[in-house]
Structure formats: C-alpha cells, structure tokens
Amino acid sequence: MPHSVPIWYSWDNGEAFMFTGTKTQKWKNLLHNPFATLCVDDREPPYQSVIIHGKIEEVQIPLNQFVRSLSMRYYGLTESNEFSKSYPDYAEDVVVFKLIPSKIVSDLQK
Image 1: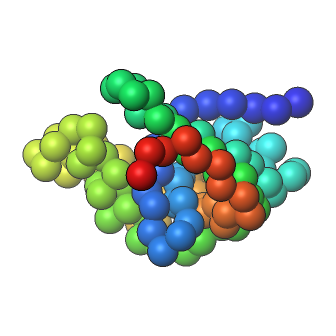
Image 2: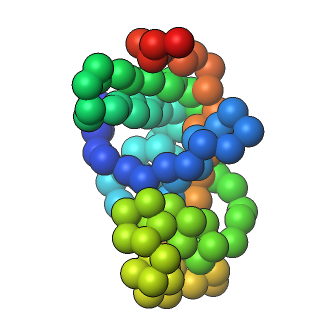
C-alpha cells in the first residue's frame, strides 16, 4: 500500500535529502521498495507545488549537522541546536537517505 507522511527535507545538487528512524514503517517500506514520491507545496496563494518521483538511496553524512540544518527552518538557531542534540552522529536507529529524481512535476510559476 502507498504510505504518505510529512517529512523534513533539504534540496542539494538536484536531490532531496531526508532522515527517519530505522524502525519506522516508512523506512521498512523503503527497504522493501526503494522508490518514493515527495510532494512539496506552498500553502500561501497562489498555492504552488512540486512533485518529485524517484529512487531512494541511503547516504552516509553527519547526522547531527544534517538534522540541525533542517531544524533551523522550524525552530531557529537556539532551539535547533537543542533539538539536534537528540540526533548524534553515531545514532544507529536513524538513517539519512536521498531521493534521486527520475521525474519532476511542477506547477510553479516562472
């Protein structure tokens, strides 16, 4: 069955990077079928979106720094530093992965 959940992401060099727990249904599904779709929408008028389809690959990057950079969007500097302490680089129960686009559908205005 398709599995849809909100997720933090960063876009770098044409790929979307994300993280999740290794025991989550999300990660179990991706291990079974390493393809996903990421939908990013703008909740402000004119309500634009981008949908990215592609293959998932696990990546080895410093977890703490990655989580801190993502949490800055939501919490700001002070709180993101505190939040990211829960994600040390040596965490074995968290995985960082990337979505390599094979198809991008966008209604963004130019």
